[in-house]
Image 1 (tube, one colour):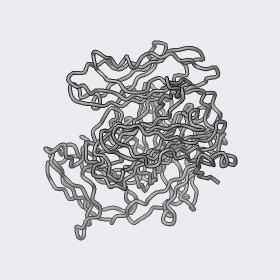
Image 2 (cartoon, helix red, strand yellow; image 1 turned 90 degrees about the horizontal axis):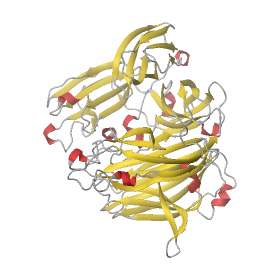
Image 3 (cartoon, one colour; image 1 turned 90 degrees about the vertical axis):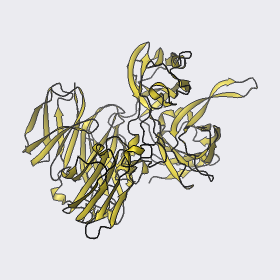
Image 4 (cartoon, one colour; image 1 turned 180 degrees about the vertical axis):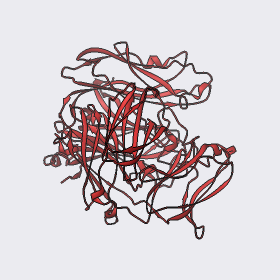
Length: 635
């Protein structure tokens, strides 16, 4: 039975004596620490002693408001472990270096209640060598106002990690101006000499930049996308664009500021993302150099253009397992606020799978159920190399038991058609809410703003078929569409191409609209949506309550695409689906390239995709009862 064990420094060794795989030891390093006025806030934590083994270490960063209220601005917060360097200063005090564990940008929170809290979760397993015994943890607040509170809970999950961490090498840590002709950022991003220890079988490079400051040319660095380039031994090994284009889908919305503007690898109220590079084939044991170059840029008339940068090189021993898949997380159904944009749901579950074994993972059989109800099985197919992950969606057969207990269980039954090597990372549970149940007839009532070409909406059934839609609108016009539905599950989506919703304070010339569902019989409001929604509104709902599928009719579909990658001709084998269906080809962002009607009878479909541009695509096949999708690469 899994145990959550909260510990203090003096009791830690006692609890660790009987901790077993799957048990969790929780250490609170900061408890509602008040962050204000550009400060460093240090606390000493008593972590488990060296020699214990952990399959995963998680950091729960709970941000909140102090009694005086939260700040109205988006400021940077950083969490560091202070690692001893083995040197002392002139007073004989040990010198410690900052190693950043995570970074979170505060939201525009001037109108938030004092009780507001938000939890951000980070997997920091790779930093394990620094996280035992007595450790100094620093929270840094880069804000010039009274700000926020930070609670840091470290969770050590007993067990075997995917591989042992040999070393954590600091490459860059700090900040640098960008575009200054008198002080190039390349001075900060200088070449570093590294020594890869013997026994290293895997090397991973993490680069975590966030751009700040704007004005002048190109509004750098907060609002300008720029590339960086990773080099080892003076040879470029990878590159990426420092940009986050999903701020309009921020789960923490609405905020009183410009929360929906895309930014340089961050969004207000969200974490800064990691760029990860597998450098194993380039960093064999011995001496090497590592460095990063930035896209050339000259800053004109903006002295605040800069990047916060953290970068570490991790070296690992061999994989701990040969045939192992990890069930990382349940995205839907879930009450996790970070996934609130697409929850609650009434049809598909969505989980993250990861390969944590040396062998490629090509299939994972899952068993899932609503707590206390019938367990069903479904199989993911694909191809994941070591530490690669994929998001898997599958239809949930029976929601009827959710009335009693709203808990969703998923576990791995088999990996690659055989027993999984490590059972302790095979199961996850989520708590969830039921989607609203609406009448069989209601009115979609909305008003456009002055940019009607931005807007479109669809309502799809559980199989993905469009039941209702509208793609063209007139400016500042009220629409009242009466909609009639059969019993079932539906998904309503209203989109805005400019990512600024129907009402946003910084675009006054756009005007303001509204969006709501109303009863057909008396026009009373059933559901009112906030018009400041950013990119889209998604609402799952049922007509006539929860759904149930006859178990005898539940045949899980599958699809195999070969060759994959492909240059032109692709063979598509679909199993578990018969009769009329539709095939969609989507780009990696979910945009439909084309659609084709099919008549499935077990045959192999052969299609010529030579006209597609090179890149990754998704083939999705749906019928009235189910759907299946699979990624493929055109090269």
